[in-house]
Length: 170
Image (cartoon, rainbow, N blue to C red):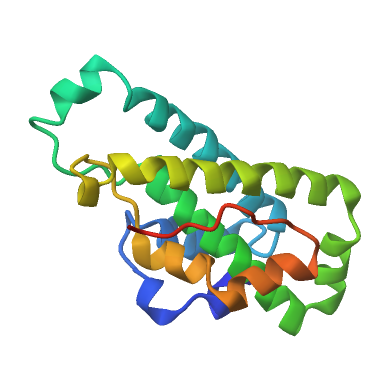
């Protein structure tokens, strides 16, 4: 369902892209199940937090000399944030019953709020370790601009998800 609300410029269709993995390939396994995206966002957020923690170690400092780019879980967190927002928009526009089920599920909303808040903290903390700042983590500013756009944030507002830590590149 999210595919219809993801802008074309983010639909990278190669076997190793997150779009292919989480959007195209998920069609074969409950492709419209919101819990799959939420579970993947949760996984990327946890691993992204580990990448932030790792960036504060001596080993990271040593690796900065030889590693130029890591498109890992921080970038994955941003991508999954985009997919979640896209899913919410697509559901609202074409599956009102599905959207209402999400918006009326206190447990799901509590979990989404927890994961979303941590995702915002991860992408904000990653900025100082980004390629742009001299680090090696890929922090996709174009994806984060989409996620933090008024239209995307309105999808979260509609279901009561707070988003206080708006990302902004320096």
